Image (cartoon, rainbow, N blue to C red; front, side, top):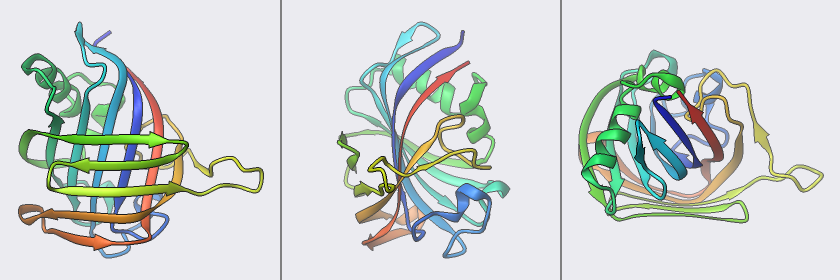
Length: 200
């Protein structure tokens, strides 16, 4: 087995609730500017333990998500070792195949890879994500009539292939990245949360 990863996802973008990208429709603004982060509660990649690490992606999607050509900046939390960085990049650039490689196929350009302070906090379905000085998001979820978190599954696009996502809203979303065209300070836009297990 090339990798086994278990963890949680936090994601927010500048589309209104719910982001059309997940069902293959064009983004609300014609483009989609997002930040998402994967926190690995457990996992190994070709024998390298990556438990406790967080990988964040700040991205610009230039049109329909299924057409690809994403431009993105990758961030790893400051505690990441050189071996862990190589292992995680091998997964998230698609080199090791599996479910993550399907997402990697949509990437046109990775403009940078950096290690920065990352805050990834989920408590009772609410989440806070901070990626260095670039992005900050605070999220809350929606609930159904039974009190359970509203869930989205079986979508044509997913940043967590094979896993359901919990539909939410960002009470605040700020992102500044000149090269990606991010200059955002928004309230009430799309947010998603998930737990995932990836095997390849």
